[in-house]
Structure formats: structure tokens, C-alpha cells
Image 1: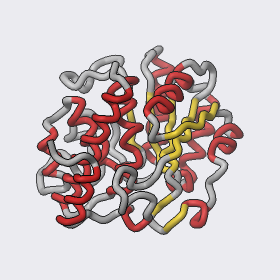
Image 2 (image 1 turned 180 degrees about the vertical axis):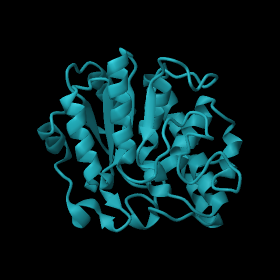
Image 3 (image 1 turned 90 degrees about the vertical axis):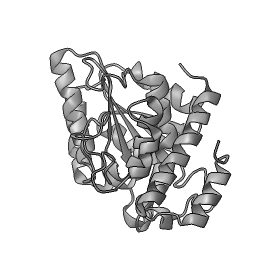
Image 4 (image 1 turned 90 degrees about the horizontal axis):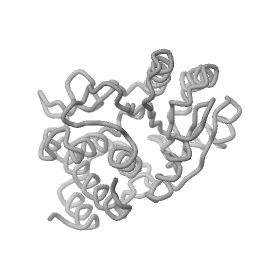
Length: 273
């Protein structure tokens, strides 16, 4: 178990390495990667039962990044956890890399589901949780979605299924940064109130601050204790969090920083060691 200070330090490194990977590729999605970083770090370093030396370990917890375009944060987190060297982040989106533009379970260790087509990863996570229920597996399945992703109908079909089978081994986390490629989420197609909508579908809903490690840990611990229904954690975040010129700016949904912008971002994140 890590302290909150240790988790925050890991998240700082993850943000830097994610941005370096996107810069190296000349393309990618920095905004949503920076908003989801703290969630990923809290899960992989304090909550999930995983073994980087044995990525397919029986009985492991599973995480599905349904908002697959935010994979730079996932890759950088997996690298920090020991699945592969952090230096490999510089191969992001390069020809022949394991770190493709969206997660590929066939080539990248630690990736449980290939995602990118929005909503489908969430549905796959529901299927994993239901399979675990049938098999008597006591592990947990975590599904991370974007709030704009909740505009996909498959999300709600899967949510109904999860409630029908009382999948208390499933914990969904919504990265609620209220921005998508076309602007404010609720201006494009309103999804709020997210917690009340999931509750209407038979889920337990927990609200938390997605950039406060203790708030995240407390929310996950509460979710783990839920019996008889799936749980969603609605984590309030900011797109581009940690970098002043990216924070809460829709334009940083899907473009790479240039040399000068990367240097400023790295400096704001504490500089290179």
C-alpha cells in the first residue's frame, strides 16, 4: 500500500511520461489522459490485485479503459507498475510498437480489453464481471468511462444487464471532466445527473473528487463493500489537469504538444529528475 503522498508522486510521473509519449508520436489525446491519471494510479497501486510479472494471473482484478483514447495514461501507469520500462512510452503510436493509439490486448501486457469504439469496453467489462459471477471468481472488474462516452446507447444496455445480474464485483468509474471533442458534454448531449441516472438503472452511485487521492481511495473502498448491485463512482475531474494551459480546455482533447509546450508542461509537473 502506498501513502497519498507516494501516489501523488507516481501520478506526477505518469502525467509527464504520458505527455512525452504523445509528443513523440505527434498525436494522441492529452486532455483525457491527464484527467484520468489519478484514478488509474489509485487503482493500480493501492486497490487492484495484479502481478506485473504475471499479467494473466488467475484471480487477478481486471481494468477496462473503455475511453480507450486516454491510453497514454494507462500505458504510463502500467510502466510505473512494472509491466514494461517507462522508456517504452517514447514508442507510442510508432510503427511496430506495443503501445498503439488505442489499447490492444493482443500485444500490450496488462491491457485486458482492446478498446476505442466508445461504450464497447464498458459492455465487455460487464461481460467479464458476469463471467466471474458464474465462475465464483472473487476478483473485481473495473471499467473506466468518459462522461461523453455515456452518450452511447450501449452503455445503458450494459448497465441494465449489470443490474439484472446484481454484479457487485463490478465497479465503474466515470471520468467526469465535462468536456468532449466538440465542447462541454452537457451542451453536446446532456448526461447529468450521472449519479441519479445510474441509480435509476439499479446501480449504487458514489460521488468523489477525481484528483484527490484520499477521496478516490475512500470511494473505491466503499464500492468494494457494496453487496447485491454494481457500483459507479462519479469522479469529478478536469481535462488536462496538472498543466495550466491544457486544464479545462476542449481543444486539448486530441492534439500533441509541440516542443515548447511540452517543455512548459514538464516544468509545471515538477521538471525532469
